[in-house]
Image 1 (tube, one colour):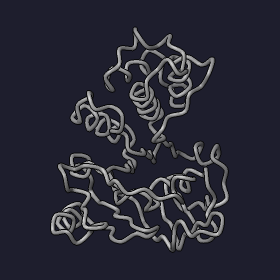
Image 2 (cartoon, helix red, strand yellow; image 1 turned 120 degrees about the vertical axis):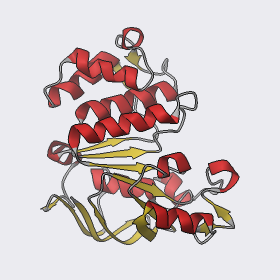
Image 3 (cartoon, one colour; image 1 turned 90 degrees about the vertical axis):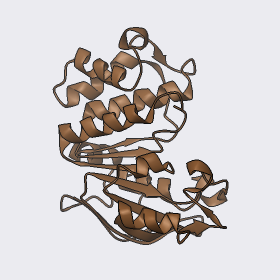
Image 4 (spheres, one colour; image 1 turned 60 degrees about the horizontal axis):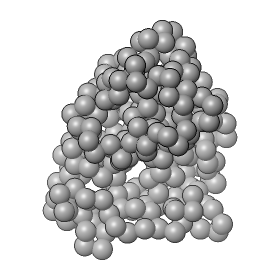
Length: 253
């Protein structure tokens, strides 16, 4: 479905991603690795926020390397940001209605998805998408909107971030229902083992490169054995805690 061929990305003279080669066609694919490894940049290249410096990106055989975001979205790619965007003047029901209309869903059906992410549609549908909503609330709304769109390829950047009070099991159910609806691929950036455990395959990145792309069992085995680490810290250390390292290049993007 999605293929990246020798994809590189540079910014301000820095090589952020180096010769990425991937074929993504599984149901659930998790992307993990230390902070600054290029995970979010990879997602933004796929959706079209950034354009590859070199290489090709193919979606269902179509070259989308230089295609704008809106055209990629029309082809069936959606993206949920790590930090959701606020839309001043737009209400939650407006956003959900737009997502629902794309796939012939009624507004009440689209809003019902809000309950699946732990929000009562009655309380939230008339709320404005502004700073009165917390980061966790915005995160759930964006996940609900992505699920309502039901595209063939859905990208999520750390969907569990900022929603600690919402059970992981509920989050996983949303992904499972999304797959049942689309039979497409869901690609999730995450450091949490409970998210990695639902993946068919895992992409482990470090320093802008794909170090390993294999089945969940093989990658997690290497993680637990300390074979995929950063400064002695495995992604599974400290009860699945995030990495503390930061990367100025990634942060600038």
